[in-house]
Length: 335
View 1 (cartoon, rainbow, N blue to C red):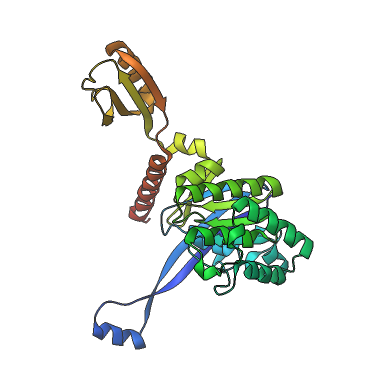
View 2: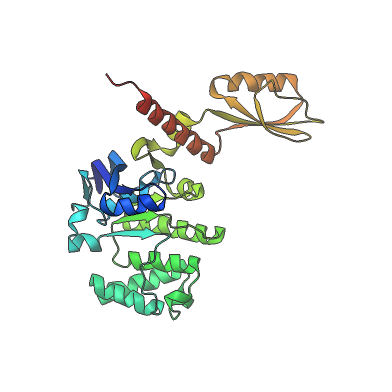
């Protein structure tokens, strides 16, 4: 049975509109105008227990709005959702102890308390049995390497330290569903790696369902086999990460190294990079076999590799495809 079921979820915001200038400011006091902004449009998907799914999209695509609805912070305009048997926005107390939302740019800790005290406040809030709390706190503290932070006030923590403590605090009730919104935002590479490893271990040990948004593709490729792409509020793709490259990756990356000086190879494909003896080409999928054969026949090839394009390029191509589809829909004549 699915842990999370999203059924045509929609969220529309009523946003005030005002033109610039003093006269328009005064006018807006008495005759305010609004426009409707569809942040999320008819989005549907399901997540199985134990899945870690990447939730991707450009800024403003509707990712955080969706996570806020699934964690009960926002009411939807239309549609429905079921998260481990609960409708999130009804804010059932039991639901609040069995799901967690961690946002990389938001602080949910007690700012003036030492970390140990703010964790104890969390234990009392969620009525976690003392033995379970102590066992989890000890285990999570060790895995995340935050033992020396327990006596520090939260306000004195660095961004990376605070993020690790945020995750630790959110997982103390052992929620079976976890929503992560940019959990590695602004962190250095070693800190990103530590948090990714911890999230993967938690999902494996607890069988937790995790929906992850991130602009760091290393987070997605390290943790997620499946990705959901949302663009301009609408679902654009839902499937395996490998299938995303197959569907939206326009070509293959061919890297060739030759003995001696690299000649002009622009006739074989688009030259992405060229050195003294090495070149990187962007080649369309339907011609890659022929291009490889020609390179081997024409040049003194020392090494040749064919790879999918970097996932960042595939994601950019996916967003561009979404832009084109949305623009075509808006420009289509009405009948």
